[in-house]
Length: 95
Image (tube, rainbow, N blue to C red; front, side, top):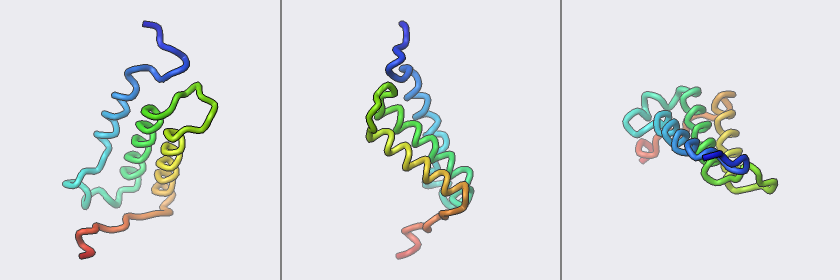
């Protein structure tokens, strides 16, 4: 099968989703990893990739929800790397 240059290769979304699952900080690891800026940024970058691949057509010239979501996640990742944001704290501890 010859891949279309108008869409993403079929194997890319499952690969991106797998990467995102690997990089996501789960409940069990949250307290240990929440201050690691690179980890938080990588999680956001992987999420942005999933959003882009799942909800955007690369050949489309118009803005899409997938692109907007990816941009927001990438901006959040950059903010983590630049130390412009930090962990807001655990909601369970605020009660």
